[in-house]
Amino acid sequence: MNSGNTAWMLTSAALVFLMTPGVAFFYGGMVRAKAVLNMLMLSAAALAVTAVVWTLWGWSIAYAGKSVGGIFGDPVTGFLLRDTMVFDDQTGHYTAAGLAANGSKYPNSVDVAFQATFAMITVALICGAIAERVKYSTWMIFVALWITFVYAPMAHMVWNNGLLSGKGAISAALGAPVHDFAGGTVVHINAAMAALVIVLIIGKRKGFGTQPIRPHNVPFVMLGAFLLWFGWFGFNSGSAFAADGTAGYAWVSTTASAAAAMLAWGFTEKVRTGHYTAIGAASGIVAGLVAITPAADVVSPLWAMVIGAIAGIVCCLACGLKFRLGYDDSLDVVGVHGVGGLIGTVLIGFFAQGTGLLAGGDWRQLAVQVVVALCAILYSGVVTAIIAFALEKTVGWRVTEAQEVGGIDLADQGERAYDFAGTASSVLKELR
Image (cartoon, rainbow, N blue to C red; front, side, top):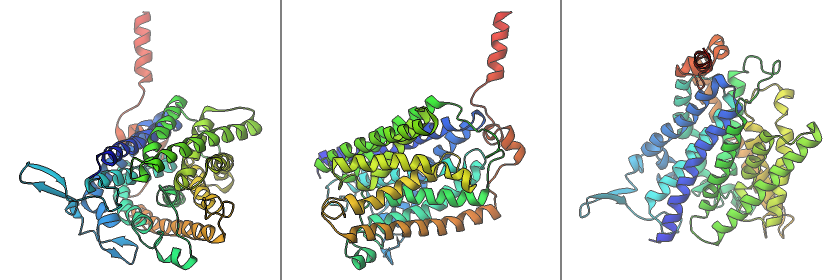
C-alpha cells in the first residue's frame, strides 16, 4: 500500500463529498425564499439515498461485478461491499480486502468512498432543473432508481473498461481511445440529459416565462460556487488516483479553465446587459469547471483557458434557450452542465496533446469523443424517460398548484426558511 496515495484519495473523497453541500447552497440561493429548504433537502436526499444504494449494489454494478455486455456489472459480486471489506480477527477491525484495481496502491475501501461521492454529486445536479415543484418523496425514489439503472451502468461503461471506455468496442472501431478523465459524460452530460427529460415530463412552474422568478439569496449562490471550486480539486485532481504530477497539473488546468470561464461569462453579460453580475460570475465558474473535467490531464495550459473561455461564452448564451424553446430548466442544469460537459468532451478531439486535431493528432480522437457523447445522451435520455414516466404514472412528481404557489417548503417540509412574520412581530414588541 502507498500511504501517500491513500491519504490523497481519502482527502479527495472528502472534497468531492463537499461538492454536494456546495450544490445545495448554489441552487438554494437561486430559488425563491419559499422553496429554499426543499432545495437543500433534495441535495441531502441525494447524499443519503445514494450512500445506501451504493453500499447495497451500486458499487457492484459500476465496478465490482462481472461485466454484462460491457454495459453493467452484476449486482451480486459486490453486494454490501462483500468484495471489498473483510473483518480482521486479529485486530478486531474491518479493513479492505485488497488494493484498488487501478494500480495506484491504495485500499479498495478508499476507492468505494471516492466513487460514491461522484455518484452523489451527479444525481444532486439534476434537482436544480426541477426546483420548486416536485415531491420530496418522489425525488428519493427517483434517486435510488437513477443511481441503479443510469449512473452505475454509465460509470461501468466509461470507467470500468466497458462499452464506452478507452478499451471498449467504440474506441476499437474508431481507432482512438475515448478520454473522459473525471466525468464529462458520466457526470455532466448524464445528469443534464436526465434533467431535461424530467423537465419535459413534469412541465413548467406556474408563472414561468410570464412573471419574474428571481434568486432570493445571491450570497448563497456565490458561497456554493466557491465550495464547488474547492471541492473540484478533489474531483479532478483525485481522478489521477495518485498524489503525483498529474494530480498537480489537473489542479492547475482546473483553476485556469474556471477563471477564464468566469471572465468570459462576465464579458458576455457586460456586452448583453451592461453589468457583471454575481450570478453570472458564479455560473461562469461552474461552466469552466464542468468543461475542463473530462480534459484536465491532457490539454496544455493555453487550451485549458481556451476551453474555459469557450464554455463561459457558449453556456451563458445557452441558458437563454429555455425561454425560446419553452422548457423550464429552473436553474440551468442543461445550459451549464449539459452544454459545458459536451464542450469539454468534444474539444478533447481538438486540443488533447498528441491526439487532438490542433495538438498533433488527427480526426480519430474527435470522432470517438463525439460518438461517445452521443451515446451518453441517448442512454441517459432513454432510461431516465422510462423511470420518470413510471414515477409520473404511479406516485406522481408534482405538488399541487396551491402548494407550489404557497411555497413547497411549507407543503413538503412543514417549515419556513425565514420567519419574516415572527421577526417583524418581535421588532414591533421591542419598539412598544
